[in-house]
Image (cartoon, rainbow, N blue to C red; front, side, top):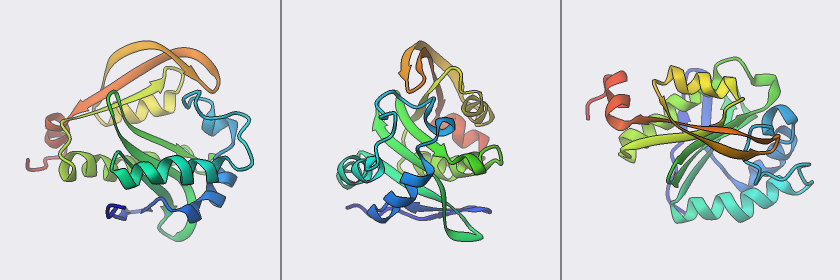
Length: 185
């Protein structure tokens, strides 16, 4: 498997996903507040072995082939405490996803994690564009994209765990991201 970095932010540690994370994911992930706006491919109700199956059979193999990058989001003050996950995908129109368990939502943790992951995407991987699809009803996720300087580029129908609704695709170019972050090219 390629070498995946660990990221440290003021409040977080982002560690590469490992099979040992599956039990924590199984506890934190299957909550309506977490899954309702995710793609309908997420099984709901979430099966008892859902996290293990996903990590073992989908995420880790994709990481090994270099088409996906997954990290667990942990609290810097409590490194054993996982609070969510963030990932990058080498898929047209879908480059980043994240989820955060309910007790930690609304505290800016996702924005902080996105800063580290976006820098990896644009600076280390040198990708020219980041596009992120999301359910139109997901106002919190939309605000993350807006704060990042992304712009809405597409609206289509999408199937989500909560049902059909509009899917918005937001994007930012590498050039725009570098300019916002005053990062040398």
